[in-house]
Structures are given as structure tokens and as C-alpha cells.
Image (cartoon, rainbow, N blue to C red; front, side):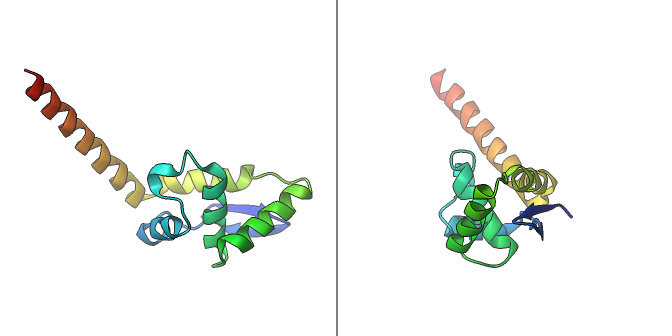
Length: 111
């Protein structure tokens, strides 16, 4: 299990499963926007760590950063969980397959 530290407290990084993806979407971060919204993604993901809301997570992150901390360990733990997630791999594979099929269809229609 991947862990990280915020404000001197160690947290377990939650798995990226279907429920985590839904929780991130409910917090305003759809999967396709995760790279476009790194701060919102980190806040929403951190809120999953202690079953809090995004405002609580934001306040903790802010206090951590004001005290001289960084989000590197959180972001690293989150990235590892994404890499290790069977569900996330399945989503990426499905998306890649769909995109390949669309390209083939477009190429056939051009001819």
C-alpha cells in the first residue's frame, strides 16, 4: 500500500477503483480532466484518504504548504495507485480500443 504524509500525519493512498473514480467525479474531477486539473485532483483524492469533503482536504493541504510542505508525496502515491489499478488500466485499454476503431472507421470512410 502506498502512503504519504500531510501535516505530519501519514495517510494510506486509496486504490483507484470504480468508487474512487465516482468520488472524484462527484468532487468535480472527471477522469479525463485529471491531468488538466492537478490541484483539484490532489484535493479530491486527498479527501478520499480520510473520508472528508474537498473543503476539509483543501484546508489541510493549504496548512501543509504554508508550513513548508509540498504535494510531492501525495502526487507520487496517487500516480503509483493509478499505475497499479486494474480498473484504471481497463478504462485506458477500453478508451484506446475505441479510439483505434474510430480511426479505422474514419480511414475507411475517406476511401
